[in-house]
Length: 413
Ligand SMILES: NC(=O)c1ccc[n+]([C@@H]2O[C@H](COP(=O)([O-])OP(=O)(O)OC[C@H]3O[C@@H](n4cnc5c(N)ncnc54)[C@H](O)[C@@H]3O)[C@@H](O)[C@H]2O)c1
Ligand SMILES: [Zn+2]
Image 1 (cartoon, rainbow, N blue to C red):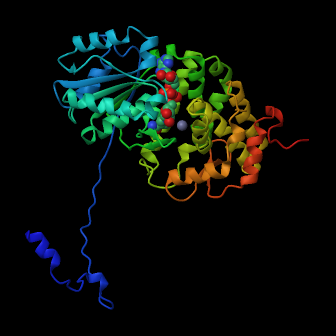
Image 2 (image 1 turned 30 degrees about the vertical axis):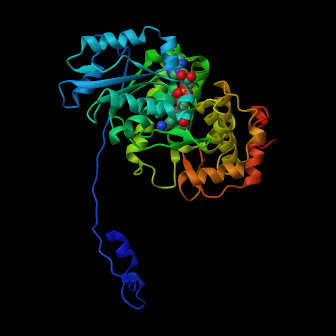
Image 3 (image 1 turned 90 degrees about the vertical axis):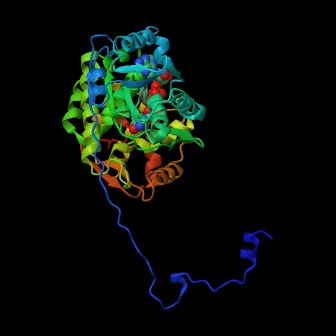
């Protein structure tokens, strides 16, 4: 008989677990583990990053401490389709600067838009490239694309070898002023947005405004929603700027857009470092103003609505609700709705009647990880957290989106 069978058949001894002896003190020994990791990364604004004379990328890599760096470039398929010369420019840049950066392969294409976050094989393909080209934790992945591609590549980079260095080159307004400058990544699963993901600060972010030149109006507009959001919760002066420049923004005048993107990115980056909760362990998510609805609408429409478009609707609803509970005055509400509509956002989306606020809030609570905390406005530039939402009032606010601006939720007379 094998030895283990003998051991198995020996008579059972009474359990000797310390906790199980009634009346005896519970034995415990603790090693208190504590350490701090500090992060820093630059968010650099430039133009034509792959021009041979532009040294921004090289200067970033110089911070790696290595003379030569192995680099894999991943590009959003739509960016490449609209900028057919981009691959050649990247390869030329790599060739010119091969002493600093060695491209391990030609730029690799990732499906642009939400597709890459819905299809897990996209992340698997990046992992396979990391393995095939022997990238290590000191190598670089450069992700060029919209927020979705940055999220998916960021997740792949963070999980391959437990973290390959990531440089983000955001190519949409929303990615340059919000999604690309933060510390999160993720993909969708089980029909839920960002269900899988990590907190992983990038090595650097490089915002090249030339990428925005191929963006359609829809995506130029969508990104402005995040600027409106951050202005509303943090910075009245920035809101005044957006309101004053609303016509220029609605026409996507480059100089106005660039100022909007810079200030929005700056507020986001500062919030992350100064909020005291960069990895969102608490339940409060100030930057998620308007987002509980946004995430739900994105799910309900299967990704047909852009994140920024959904955020604009979420901002409108939560502003109407803030007004409904007496936190926000008539003039402020009017200015917020006027700004969103002048920018061209469609606030009365056909998916709204299918939105069940009770279920959506319950899911959002789960996403937050515990208590419900919904940012509301107690004035422009000042947010306050609500831990209870009046569902009938919320339903009324959602229904109000079907009305024209002057009558939306404003006291009449
Ligand atoms: N990680 C975060 O902190 C964070 C924050 C906010 C949003 N997000 C995520 O970001 C995503 C939304 O990002 P988005 O608004 O950039 O949309 P997106 O990435 O879906 O891009 C929109 C479309 O534009 C295309 N595109 C990208 N750059 C282009 C360019 N320069 N010219 C022409 N077309 C271009 C894309 O291929 C896509 O088809 C969502 O998945 C959202 O969840 C993440
Ligand atoms: Zn957002």
